Image (cartoon, rainbow, N blue to C red):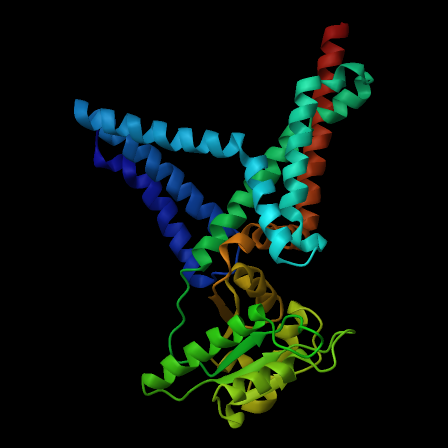
Length: 352
């Protein structure tokens, strides 16, 4: 089999790299990477099988069986894995909806299995079953969308900014007891300080740290001011810190920090080298908001406890999904229309 069969994955790889280096904060990067990965793995498998090496073929077959087997096991036990994670989160975190997403999803999967077992659709009117027929396709679309988001999020973790930054925006999070830095928020500040120290160690001028976060209704001081005081206590010179204290969400973090930077630098933010620091699971969505705010800034992420990641990633996906709700509504609406049209055509043909 000619090596030319690898032209298709090479084509997808070139497109992916072009989009990736142009802007890492776009969901389309995941689509192009997955097209490359699927085409490369498929082409490589065909090429190895064509060599006619019996041992190699057995190794290839075992590898495929292993991957498929693990995938099936995860799929079959997904509900129980989610509920197990929910139990851990329930013991260690506050009992909020945002921290209960694995619980909700796990119970939802169990409910779907029960529905499939008892098949209640046989008792429903035909028009209801017609509408429900589209449900598996919507589920597949949402799962494909989640997989693409997950791919993009993982790829974004390979972002390594150069040590030539002028500013690092540190994104705020809620304060404990209204005035104390939480462990999660401390990890964001420490991630920025680590980058600050490394840039200084390389003989470069250290970046200014912009601590961004307003004051919530249950807080006695702004997140920006609390973070700034925390960093100064860690040894960062006050002259290398700035505080943005008006923002209420991530988009405002970016917009208001941009204004603070431009006022401090006395030039457009586009002429400055800027990155932001947040938790690893939040980097991609924060990057999307930076793009909306007109900031050419990528993120660096602090590590998050493994038990907390499933909830955090699901929450981030839902937020990203809602950011693109118009596109998703159009796609799902088109699927529903096609389902109704196809059902009508089939009924018309059978009735002739």
